[in-house]
Image (cartoon, rainbow, N blue to C red; front, top):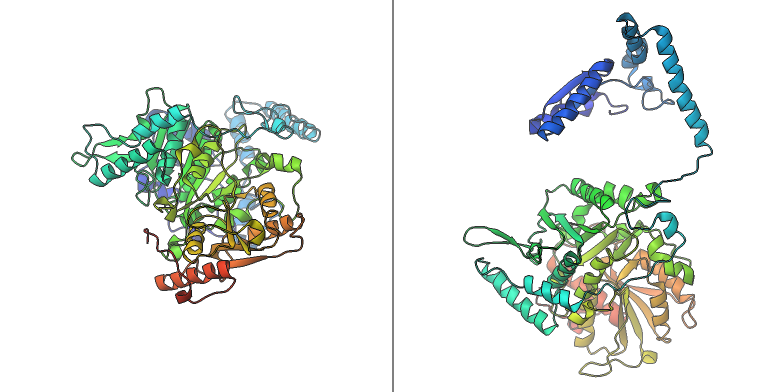
Length: 592
């Protein structure tokens, strides 16, 4: 139905169902005024699906007597059509006449039945005015073992540790760093698995892919279903995951995480078609049905999610508030300005932050802080360590409630030498770190001055941290602290507040790779001002911006320009001015 658009302008074919010809599905055309034919068509379609498990399409040919709604005036745009519609007898009148003529019912019997139905509708309408829910999703959870929304509205649930046991970690580690003896893996993968085994054995230098595999594997052994879909997810867009291996001699497939134990939970991973709207919508539906599954969708590049914006806006960000629909769906969105141009740099972090429902100008009370994860509409994180990514995934399952999670996954951090974690950060009584403060090294080759003497405290999120970290050390800048906001929503008000009090004499800078009109700036700036106004030493203080200038395109396609912009905002962050490239030493990471 095109509303004011005539069918001949709304499509190129005679029937709206003609698109089904592309998949050779049967099409049933039926006149909506023929009641019994309509019933037959739908019964036939249902039986077809049940018997053959194939698609079938019904083209129900009808009309709207009042146009788009009862207050509409369709004659403005379809005068001739609606003259004919006014002459049409209502379908119920036609069917009544048919039933009486064939002797199925008398007129009196039909009138009595119509009166009965109208009475049911009238009574239900009257009752609706004083209706009080008794067994809805608000009062009784549709998920066995989970608290209802009514219970969660009054109770504060604990934050459970998300570290796994050393025994389970060790077991998973053996499987994700080896293949069966009769499997011919690619030589490069053999090398990768050997390095992974050595790292796991030492308990150090755990990279992004290993941490993810450990998160998946530990959940599977703990009885939690893990499923991941998206373009290229089996190998990983950036050749980092290698979840499904291919024998180099016969192309036999082997999935390490599907062979951990005969009693493990199912591991589902599959490359999906380039239909983000359809696939993300499907995974959303799956997450609504099964809260004990870590359900994830990964975009090939983060900006590919823009074709699924309807699912994000209408369902993920708003479904719980609108319809009491709870979901723990996780979106993995590759993001990061690495000089690859406008179409492969940004996951549009700013759009997700704009959908977040937290008030930026009110510092939350202790009670609000204790409930901020329960009460938020969604979570947005941009982790900088493999361990924190590990915890972000496991945290989705080990809670008494479910919330959507949007993860900005850095491409740079997949193989960056400094982006490594210790195994001890993923075991035992460990948690996701919402905020990682400056470690303030006082020993070793590079040290910082005391907190009271810090000139500038740079706050950031995501992979730009490593750019700033390298530049600080290479330029021997010892009076600048750098801290990371790992979770952007709900905002870590308490942690940031308590930490910045330790730096009474410094200025504060927000540094980001993204242009001014993108990224996190519009989200964090008012929250940081609110925090400053609730401290003893920073009231009224502003935060300085260090990042790219406003832009229409996400990023430049010229690599030299990209590097120049990186130099500019890095020197602004560390020195308070944009220095010439020759005056500042920048790290040249191996990934470049």
